[in-house]
Image 1 (cartoon, rainbow, N blue to C red):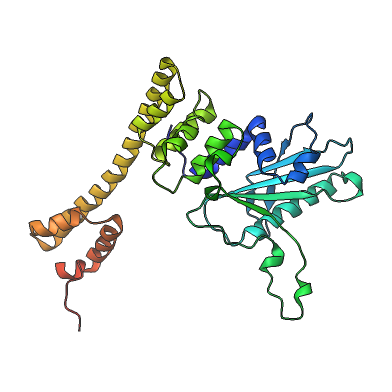
Image 2 (cartoon, rainbow, N blue to C red; image 1 turned 135 degrees about the horizontal axis):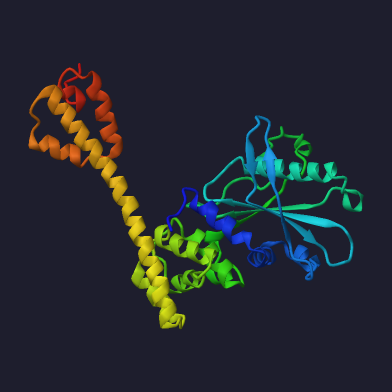
Length: 324
């Protein structure tokens, strides 16, 4: 299984696509006062969360859930979950668009429980390279003049869970959820400990989610085969299952190698094209020049190819002509 381009989003959405995993995630990260009011007999219901913005483009929240309270009332609370792997300073605006869409849909359907709009708890799950520095509400984004601070009303508040700042064992009480969140948290970092490897491998199973987790920790977390196998054996996994999982892992490594090899092949092809065209236009090239071309970056090769089109001599291609 090769990871898609939006690999982090895919893992998060796969994590919350299962009702049991989503329910555990919500119990782990919702404010305690909200969890205390949830109806244990009615699990969260995943609902559509699509937004059409002012320019007609379509956006969709990563996960939206309808929560039922346990007091017997018909009051409904929504939980809006958003995943971020990079700092996004427009997050408060993005979330409030989602909230407004939720409220608009409720009104359009004529369902206004309790005579008012339902509360929406917005949460961001973040695992970027740097700590989250974005304001946590629209109010914090507004810079009101001194003496007019009251003009910035409390509006659009959300909570953020920086996964990289949470101890691995405290990420979740569920082994699957804990493994996925830790995988996201370690997506941009090195030196995964044996304890963390054990947590990550606990999410690997003979399911769609488990296979994706295996691909993710191989390709994104860069956990080598010997450490995956060692973690499986530390967990007491039976020999047959270890062999099956490592067989699947081998297929992933082969596919990964082909993809990386294809990328290398593209660079080599650019180098060969540049050398062939340069020789046709200017004649002989030195061995040193050929070695320089073959070791150049893709960006440098593109720059030289562009220069070759209009260059009058080889020095103009490689930027060696004396400038006055």
